[in-house]
Amino acid sequence: MNSIVRFRKCSLTDKELLDRVDSMTDEMYQTGKIPCRQIPARPNEDYDLLVGELVKRYYEKIVEVSK
Image (cartoon, rainbow, N blue to C red):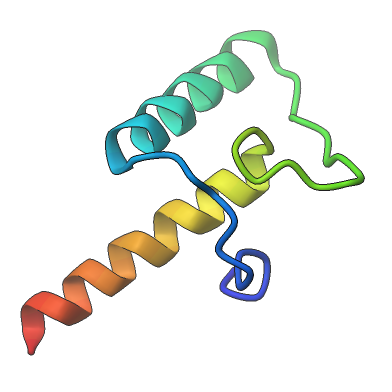
């Protein structure tokens, strides 16, 4: 997952990112449609990039806390 978001282009705040991933995940389960990947990539809108960014931020926070 880290390689997907290595460029760190997502400009959403942590709350915006959480809300967007939550909303998009709900929508995916309600509609049964899996979000398609876009070319060119949209770091603030593409589900895979948003989830990758969320995981990366979470990982960074837990590593920071464990120091």
